Amino acid sequence: MSGLASLDSVQTAASILRAPTPPAWVEQAVRSWPQLLLDHANCEKKAASTALALMFTYPEDRALTLALSRVAREELRHFEQVVRAMNTLGIAFARQRPGRYAQQLRGALRSADPGRKVDLLLMSALIEARSAERFALVGPRLPAPLARLYAELMSAEGRHFALYLGFACSAAPGEWRARLTALAEREAWLATAPDRTLRFHSGPLQPES
Image (cartoon, rainbow, N blue to C red; front, side):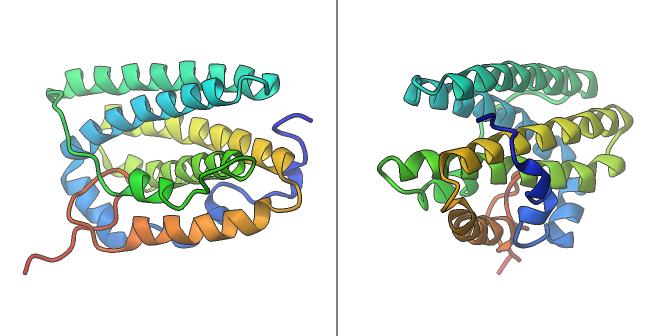
């Protein structure tokens, strides 16, 4: 069964998110767009790495591995596009401490298969959905090169969301909705609760004491 099968009745990327991005995060991101862009570049590398890791973990799932091979290549092209934008805008590349989002979302996944495979696919769908939402929120308010780039990437994230969610539906038709609800609640908290560091998937910065 194709990973895109039965998606006519599945929610759109934005509708699986249990909470919208807070306006405070949007304002902070627009003011700190160079920092946001640097984290975005790292996110594209991580997205490619996630696709490759799933390919190696589930090599027997030929349809999944072929689809993820294409996703990994596209994510690396996105990384290259972001780096070119950074060069154009004079933003230096630098190491960053990882934020809490991905690590703590991954901590909510089941540790053994077959459940872990479903959870990994749903986690990836949620991350892509959040990315698409935030591209739409901040893109129009950023410098022109980034506004155009983010409009393109928003569409790509929507496709990746559909792919990951479709494969999760195929892998566990009887339980994916319940697992999506549980993981989406965790994702919503991580994306909206006050955070110590501004990242592309963080919550808004907590007020200084």
